[in-house]
Image (tube, rainbow over all chains, first blue to last red; front, side):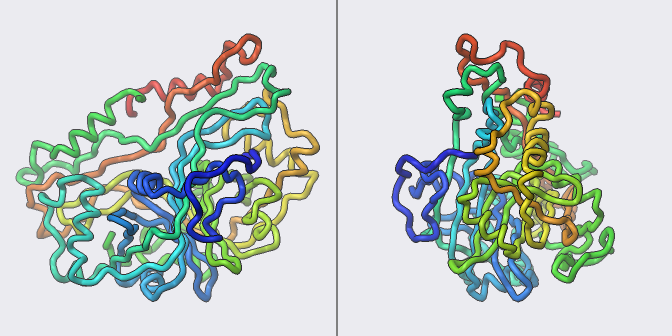
Length: 232
Length: 232
């Protein structure tokens, strides 16, 4: 993880603190890139500060339009603080591989990450049901038409927040190692050990008479098919 | 993600801010649990604050003994601040699956997470080489004996920091959905869609005469074998 700043990044930083300085050639300020990284994520890390220090909390997330959404119980301290307008930094990261160079120094990782600065806003009561539908569709498309949707009490107990995406930056590394010229002839295996968050076979709850339908919905079948595939 | 606080957690919190209050039954303060979660990780998220706000930066990590290590260029702002003793919160999270309940409200995720509070300390110059060897062994066991190790300049350009693990907490969710009694008879598929960070086939850099050995090292062969397995 040692390349120096060289080439221009894609787009322009929306603020001083989103301008990538280390390895600036990996920075990308385009909306399409940001959306693709967020849409690939189930989870983000939310950093914020209170009187006890800085905290970094992983939580489920989904994007709709120009906002990233999170949710949870009204009792969550993080959500309470965020709802009060605390400045946050939210990060999503996909680890795509370990990059093995001939020299120890040039080892690296391939990844796609996004960082968003700002303050969350509270999703108003009348928009909560639709927001949670979008979340469920992010988890499993179409499932919103099958489950029992949230009742009045459940919706009332849930806080939903959204963060505008206008102060954000993506950072991406792809490809093999960049070894020093002098090291290229070394007899050392060099390349990438790729990683991906992959589906494993669905685990249905123990089927009891009348409890669970025999036919799994399409998104479960699709999950099982993806899980059954040998590595891509 | 709606269970209420009930059962006792494992162990006792080392500090007020590590005491899990939401879903306290998922908390685990045992060292062995913490080590297992950290040792399974290639990357952590480091949260810290400076005059421009709170930041959340993903970075490579490895554990040795009672410390979590990170490293990078001397020029990194995060490392500079952390080296100065900035209070940090470091989080590791493994997403293990999507939990599909009969009701929208009881959808959840399975995960193993660890959160560590504290201040990093600088690894002294004479310990840097050994620390980086440990990192390389975490990435690929034995590789440290094959690569060109860091020379004096490379080591001097690298900052290595370690965070004591004494103010930490793990949080784990496993198993299927916990639906309301009244929903159990609903004809809705319920269960877990498991996820795992899995190896894909190694991608060797284009082999040129004399550049790369024909025989891959054991850890690359092992990676290829794991990648070739159908989902476990």
